Image (cartoon, rainbow, N blue to C red):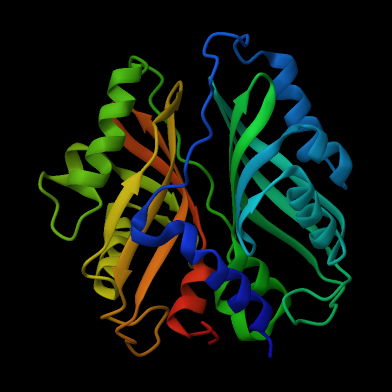
Length: 328
């Protein structure tokens, strides 16, 4: 069965996410013993993990022995050997695999890398025979460092977009990314407090079924949104349709997000959401089943408004929970 492996792995991750609990954070028992993140530690992560054909052993060497890793397709993993195994596994499906960075954020103890994962599918992937097609999809990873080592990682990649490029059953999910909108350079850069407030208001006032405030006060009319389902959207009306789509499918959505990770005009966080499929997900009939979704969000702010966002989440995990496959 094409999705047997995905279903098994996705269901296995439900236990650590039950009750909409965010992944437990490893504790630094000796605060202040480590130096702040420097360019060398960031460069090592980017060069090792986000180059071409990442060496699984070298990736593991960057991680604490009991690292916690939350991965698309694989759920929660504990231990550097388990994480290295994921890198070995995916390399058997795609040759010349790269995760080249498009953007790097640093906010001690976090490093966030938004990247493009590309490679040639010359091995079986999720039950799909080799196609020899070149595949490129977006992804985001959040790393939490401790003494220069990765203590936690949240890895999210556009799984449906990848399937859409290698299988006609999912072709509608393969989309060309829209370019980033221009910003107004004359505006003063946002403060950290501005960005933290923006993130809180995003979840409490704007990304809700009926915005508590006029969303035009926070969202640019020219916003570009790069979502983990379907094509990118531009303009506030397109963004509103995407918001409505989510809340129609899951009217009781509830979100919990992690810390605000701020770097200049960007703020990122990892999140967990729960909801009940009452409106139908991906065009399927409603199942009435509960689901848990986790992912990563990045907002870009200019002149006090959100001008761009990136969201990557475990969509295939939701499909497994609902018993749907998303094929068109």
